[in-house]
Amino acid sequence: MTLPSSPPAARTVMTAARHRAPVVALACAVLAPVTLGAAVPAVAARGTGSSLSVEHRHDGLPDLDRRALQQALSSAPDRVTGMLARVAGPDGHWAGVYGCADVTTGQAVPADGHFRLGSVTKTFIAVVVLQLAAEGRVDLGRPVQQYLPGVLPDGYPPIPVRTLLNFTSGLPELTAQDLPTTPADIVEHRFDDHPLAELVAHAVRHERPFTEPGSMQVYGATGYYLAALLVEDLTGHPYQEEITTRVVQPLHLRDTTAPKNDPTIPGPHSHGYIAVPQPGGATQLADITEQNPAAGGMISTTADLDRFLTVLFRGRLLPPAQQAELFAVPDVPYLGGTDHDPGHGRAYYSAGLLRATLPNGVTVWGKTGSTYGYTAGMFTTSDLRRRLVYSFNPTIGGGNDLALVNRILSATFTAPPAP
Image 1 (tube, rainbow, N blue to C red):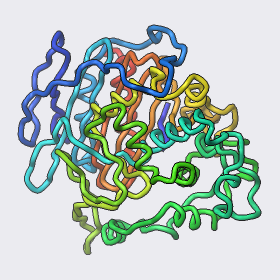
Image 2: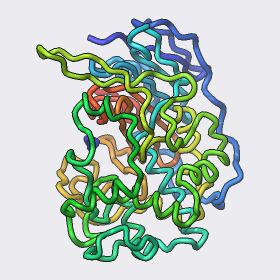
Image 3: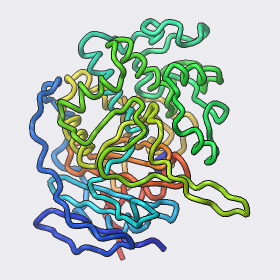
Image 4: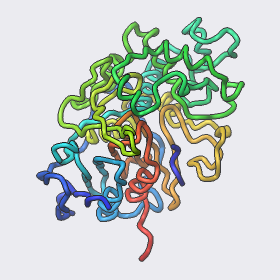
């Protein structure tokens, strides 16, 4: 299974008390050991506590292999300046870091570092929309045009709200004509503001990938721009405020923020960089840590995202009907899909989550996201027996390094090959 879209050694920061591992030296400064958070306590939640019906243990889930995890972080390519990862569950905990938080000073990556989430923000938006559906304020089966008249072209067919969340709307996406794409332009325009309505207006000028909403799936951002606009129209508040009051604050995610236009990252963090070509063929790293947060602008930590996954999968954020929507993967083809995709040519996204079955038969759910200088991801087995959260800092722009992502997934959820 492949997800869509000589370095210094990684350093194990902390493991469960009964399985402590030695610290491996990094090229950067050595960090002191840190302690992962305790088990997630109950929260005041909108759900009933009903969780997805799952087996108690996933067949094929191996013992936690800390050496494999350490090796996966060590395999980060030279186009990644820093990385951190956290694995948690009943089998124990592990956290590791790689590389440098600051290439100028050589400062080590902080294990509790904050990072930009990119499209992991979509999962939070999906939860808010599903909460609004549970409150009777939006009908997922009704066309979004009834709630946001005039936002989409008149010639569009009815596009149900549900299709915005599960990537089957058929809405077109932004292209290189709409936003800066070269490294130099990205650096120059990283503080530009692009309101949601503007992004949608630019996107719908392009050809739709398919004509019948709900008939196919293809990943994109336009549907979530509309979903965020829908949240704002229904509540009268910026969608960032709704995420904060409905999810961040009730779960006590103290290191998670949903900024509207603050370009900074609070707390300890690794810098984000982009490699800008120079005359003669060389490249120079430009620091783009500060940037307009834009539409995927949430900031969090591995501990907070682990807590979010735990509470979400325990059914404490959504009532049963909406919890089922969260895991409902449409039975439709994936546009341009292949046998090597997580869905093997069929849809593999639900409402804000990705489903993938690994070669050993273990199925994981989660979400990846990227913005310039930052890539993040969170994955878990549906019974929460093993959970992974990671972040790394690519220098090639706002994209996943798929080989690295697959290595950390494999190290977390599959057994290493026999020697």
